[in-house]
Structures are given as structure tokens and as C-alpha cells.
Length: 349
Image (cartoon, rainbow, N blue to C red; front, top):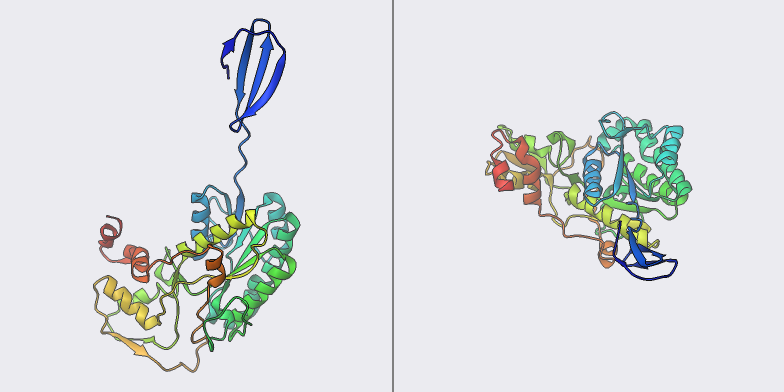
């Protein structure tokens, strides 16, 4: 753009000042300063797999709100603005990665229902292990930082809390598949990171989408309901997990030593029974129909009794965050499913 003019007799030069280029044109009797804006670095790009799922949606929103160029994949639930991709198709994954060449991949896609995995093991292992292996290989080829979402179910729950270096000993097919996924990730993409998290809840499309919010159906039940009061859980908001994913990705862009295994978890220890009672209390509903069950059901898929995660590595690197309190976070999630939606005013005003 035109700048200032003043008399001088010289030639032409260039200089930089305050991040912008200044081109100085000297001609007989005057000099013209033309400011040219410096090139703005392109925003970093991220690919989120499983972007239609509970965690994937939160991760997508978190990176979008932080100014990243975001792409997301889905398959059966693919929707507008998301890419439909069968992650078990190696050619499709390869083509996707070569086309997008993302700086970061957050791999949220997984079969995460332990009972389903016991019945449909092969299909679930294809997604949790083989697809992860393919993604890790392609991330290494294009130089992307891969962040693999894993689980506290890699541990047997007999000696908590569990550090990042403790040896996994999963009790069920789901846990074993996630351990294998971790190993495939780090074997094929040595600069990758693994983030283990506990049971999650968040902004659900239906209350049955999370093992936590599904308890809302029991809270609203008029009949007596027996709920597990044996297994200790640490229900964690997907918004908090998504923020940690973004912090890890941002830090890794400046510090390649950000790799390996990390843990993140909320701090409130609760059984399913205690979660349900907390929900009832938050919405001023009765809870005397909820019955604590302390015996293990014989036919149930084995689960760790207490797989509490020690999250010190994230905390030491200042990459963690203070988890949302369960009562306020679960209220955020459940008010749309109250009969009169009256909790919208409570939450937002």
C-alpha cells in the first residue's frame, strides 16, 4: 500500500520491521515506502478419527475453537463436513493420510464396549488393533504426531494407583485389544503418544451413549434398581480429555520429547451406585429406589475393581488440568433429557 513520500535522490532497497516487509523505492526527488504484510504461518492441522463418537466430537470442538485446521472421520455415523472412512481398510487409510498430510492425528475411533467385544471379538480387534497399526504406519510416513486414546482397563485393578510405566495386565478382551493397540502405535510410530483415560461421559446424543449417563434411566425408574457398588470408577468429562489432547499436541510441536505413555483422569472415586445417587441429588430427584449391589455377577465380563490412574507425568509437564466436578459436569450433560428442560436455565443463567 502507498506510504509516505519525501524528497531524496537514490535507488531501491528492502528492509523488514515489526514482522512486516518494507520495500523502499527511491526515485529522483522522492522516496516511497510500501509496506507488505509478512506471510502468516498456516494454522496446524489435525485429523480426528471417530469424530462422530462421544470423545471424538469433544476433541473436534476443542481443536476447532483453538484455531486448528480440523478434519474428522466417521463411518456408520458419518455426517456432513466429516470424512467417511473405513479405518479397517488399509488402502482407504493410506489414501486419506496422503491426501490430508495432517500435522497431528488424534485416534479416538475404537470399539469401547467390553461386553460387545466379548461377543464380537474379531471385528472389534480389527478396529482396535489392526486399524491402529495401519494408522501408526501412515502417521510415521507423513511425519504426523499420533495421539492414541487408550484406557485404564489395561490394568487388572488389584494394586492401584497405576503409573505410566506399570505393566499392563488386562482382564478382558477390550483391555487386551487396547494394550495391543498401544504397542502397535509405539512400534510403528516411535514419536507417538498414548493417552490412557477412565470411563468417560460428556455431551451425549442419547443417554445410552455413555456407561455413566445411561444411569439416568435408572434414576428416573419408578421401580427398585440394583446398581453395582463394588467396582471403583473415576468418571471423566470428555471436555477435559479433549483439552489435554490439544495441550499435548501443541506442546509436541515445540518439543518432540513429548511421546510415550500419559495418564489423565478425574479425581472423584465413585461406584455406579454413587454416580446414580449424585445424579438424583443434582436434579432433586428421589434415590431411595436405587439399591447398592456389592456382589459380583457371575456372568458379567470381568472388569478391574479399581484401575485408578496416577497422572503425575502430565502434571509434571504442566499439561494436565483440574477436572470438572462430577455433579456440575453431569448436570451439563443431562439437562436436555429432563422432561421439562427446566435445567437449561439453571446451567446457563
